[in-house]
Image (cartoon, rainbow, N blue to C red; front, top):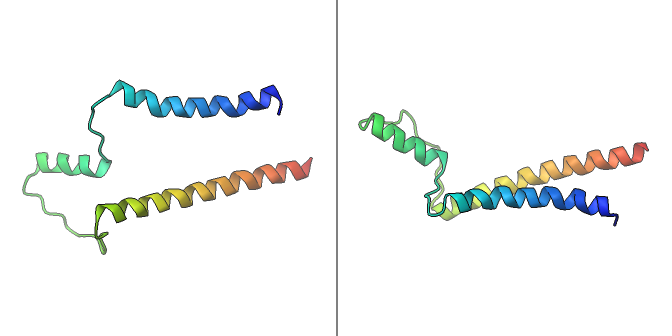
Amino acid sequence: MKKNTIISYLLPLILVVLLAVIPLQLKRGAEFSGADSQAEQAITAIAPDYQPWFSSLWEPPSGEIESLLFAVQAGLGCLVIGYYIGFQRGKRQTDR
């Protein structure tokens, strides 16, 4: 493997790791929550008597199943993106 190839793979990987680690180090001990719970807190603070006008058709029976479904959704999204990138790379290589 050429030196430039190694750098072209390692540099983005290092940047991604830094993007993940630096915020966690800067906000040590901070509580991280999702946008849904933050929106719920804001609505409760603004209008404590607010009643939702509809409810979900199905709610996961537990938080773990909800996390599992979210992880499966993220995995499928990564699969589609990876397939597209690989397909485009193979297409470019065959055009040469």
